[in-house]
Length: 263
Image 1 (tube, rainbow, N blue to C red):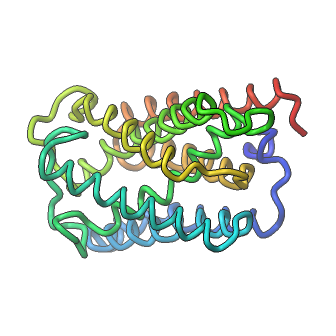
Image 2 (image 1 turned 90 degrees about the horizontal axis):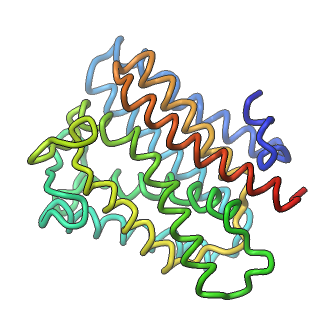
Image 3 (image 1 turned 60 degrees about the horizontal axis):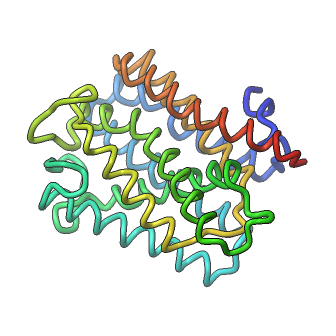
């Protein structure tokens, strides 16, 4: 199994493997669901996938963190994720000018409630990748370490958007005022992703992460997105770019992990 070849996910316990399998089984049927039952079923499948992945990420955090730290972090991600998207869709800052369609419901302030959940579903995994690149050991509370960590997390999160944005636009979940740049996605959007991830990460300052299972979620998302977009969703360009972007982050994380001599 590919995930087992990554040294930083080699120690997963059975419960973690069960959650990863559940996550995979939530997303794999999406092409079949869409073909058999149409667009409404696809929207339901996407919503179910986001909720399950956000729940899996939260469960992994809950196994490592005390309740107060967990819920402060979860609420911070949800509130700031929604606020960033509300500001972005209203003003064009920091992502560029875009609008959500009415296809994802329910919405709050014109922002689908699934969107802050989508931040929660991938941000902890991006933190895990960053923790492999910029480890806590020997870093103490140094400001420099947190800035480096937040930057690495921002790159990991933004690499995922190389898959996400073109796919969501193709499915009609949001539209750009001036489609351009990266397969119709303005380049400023990716700077916005980096900025929002950077700010949230510095506010939460996630310590003592359950790195192995969260990094496995990142790796699994990478594989599922690549296969889905290449073989089923007719998005070969984003499939290849996302594969290279997230793959580069995983290679960097694995190389850093081995270089540090971590068990």
